[in-house]
Image (cartoon, rainbow, N blue to C red; front, top):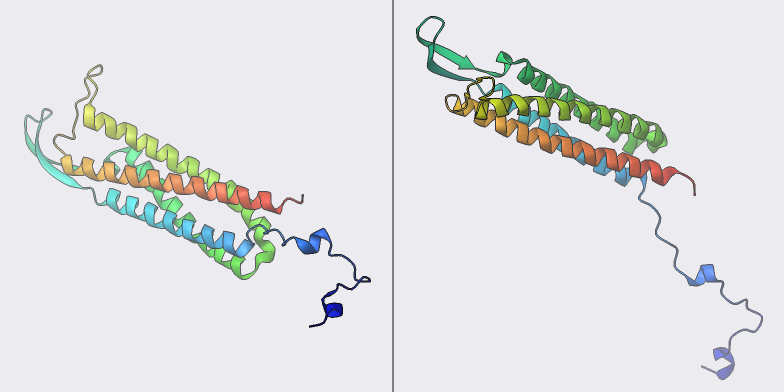
Length: 202
C-alpha cells in the first residue's frame, strides 16, 4: 500500500461526536415490559388460587363437649363459620379472576402495543384496588386466626387451634400464600408506574 493511500483525505469531514460514540441503550420496549407483566399476573393467579384451595379445603370435624346441651357433639370447623374467613375467600376469588382478565389484556397489548398507555393506567389503578382488597382480607383472617391460636384472656375467649389443629394449619398456610399474592401486586404496581414513567417525554 502506498504512502498516498495511507494519508487521510484532507477534504473529508472529521467524524462528529455523535458518530464516534455508540448510541445509548434505549428504554425497554412495551413488549418486554408487558411480557414481565404477564409473568407476574400468572404468579398472582397461581398464588391466589393456591391460597383459595387451601382455605376452602380446611374443614375439620371434632367431638367436643357442648355446655349448652351438656354432652359431647360433633362440631365442624370450616371457613364459612366465620364472616372474616368468608370475606377472605371472596377477596381471593375476586383477585384470582382479576388476574386472569388482566393477563389476557396484557397479552393483547403485546400483540397490539398501540394501546399500551391506556392499559397501563387501567392496570395501576385496579392493581392498587386489588392490593387493598387482598391486604385487608389477609389482615382480617390473620386477626381472627390469632385469636384462635392464642385466645384472649381479657374477654375469656378460648383458643381453638389446640383442638382444630388441621384447620388452623390450613388457615396459616393460606394466609402466608396470600401475603405472597400481595407482594406480587406490589411488584405489578411498581412495574406499571415504571412503564408509565418511561413514556413521559423528556
